[in-house]
Image 1 (cartoon, rainbow, N blue to C red):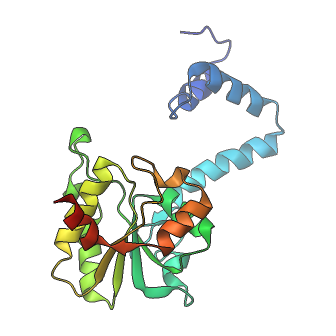
Image 2 (image 1 turned 90 degrees about the vertical axis):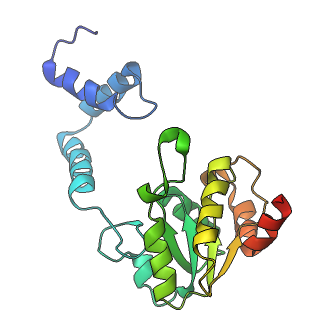
Amino acid sequence: MENFSSKVLQAAVDEFSKLPGIGRKTALRLVLHLLRQKNEEVHFFAGALSNLADQVVYCKSCFNISDNEICDICSSPRRDKSTICVVEDLRDVIAIENTGQYHGMYHVLGGIISPMEGIGPDDLNIEPLINRVKKTTTLEVILALSTTMEGDTTNFYIYRKLQDSTAKVSTIARGIAIGDELEYADEVTLGRSILNRTPYQVNVSSKK
């Protein structure tokens, strides 16, 4: 344990070092950087973090992170409400939006099925998705999860749950390499994968 000359400094370093990928040396460097800033800038930074905890909510419709009960995408009259793109989290929404190739709605699962990590279907926003599809005029559900074993497992589970609905189920084209995370795909490749999506049944039958 480092010998800090200030307990306030040590407390700040302790908190920064809890962040993913931030070791104590990096945490100390970040804290010292903040100390060199003007007081108002540090207070603005602290206020942004406080607002993150107190004001950010999850959209009641799609479970995307939002400032309001219904997010800007769900409330926009310019979006195609007959299409729902199913993604893992906010990072995937941002990645797809950056392509400029998709204009429908989203549904954020909040993760993917992963028995190794103890994450099952009940831990995700899958049941709200099924209810949403059945209660609305959804014509197509696009499964846009990462092309990993966990992503494929989640795709198949959702496909089986939606078999009784009238909505078409499709998946993004395999322009995304097997094992890739969606957020790391370049915008052109991801955009083409959305545009060239294929019926999910084709993928299922090809596995048999």
